[in-house]
Image 1 (spheres, rainbow, N blue to C red):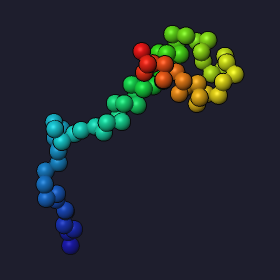
Image 2 (image 1 turned 180 degrees about the vertical axis):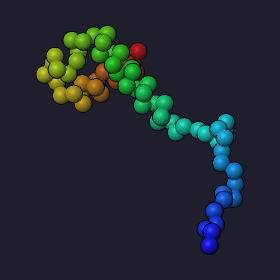
Image 3 (image 1 turned 135 degrees about the vertical axis):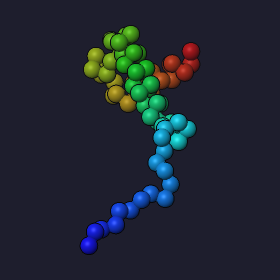
Image 4 (image 1 turned 90 degrees about the vertical axis):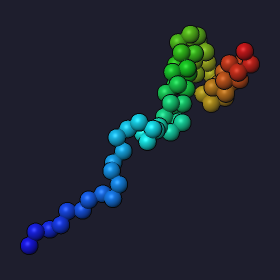
Length: 68
């Protein structure tokens, strides 16, 4: 006895406006690129060069960038 195959009730999306990325799919790579660019620009401000904790240093750097 042959088994029945199930078909989809709606056709699969072919791309276009149905294929959308979430906002963070673009925001995270941009944030990583900007962070690396800032560290390359002034490597003496990197967390390993100074004794500051990394999180407080990152927040301070972000505040400086937003103040410009």
